[in-house]
Length: 125
Image (cartoon, rainbow, N blue to C red):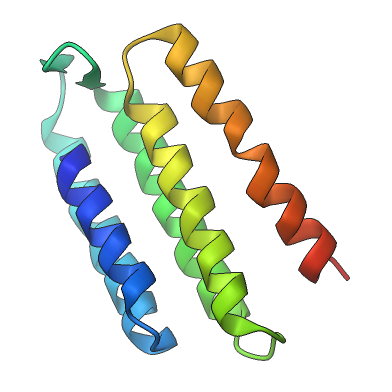
């Protein structure tokens, strides 16, 4: 699930059309909701990634907020840079919520601060 989410987010970065990225993020959110309802126990994937119910909820919430931020960015300046920041924040958050190591969770969660700072400085009215 994590690999497919990462590939889908990279495809969203490549696409320049805002409507397609909103549709893509909405589909990712719906897919994440469906997999969350079936993931009752914790499943270890290769030792580095794990999936459980809380991880599914956090991934769903992250994708939902990313779709909402894309919807609200219709009248922003420098749309491509804004979309790149939102997608990079989303990708890093997905990585942080899906790792099984506490150190990697901390590392990825703190690495969200750099693009978040750029987002606030660039578009935080």
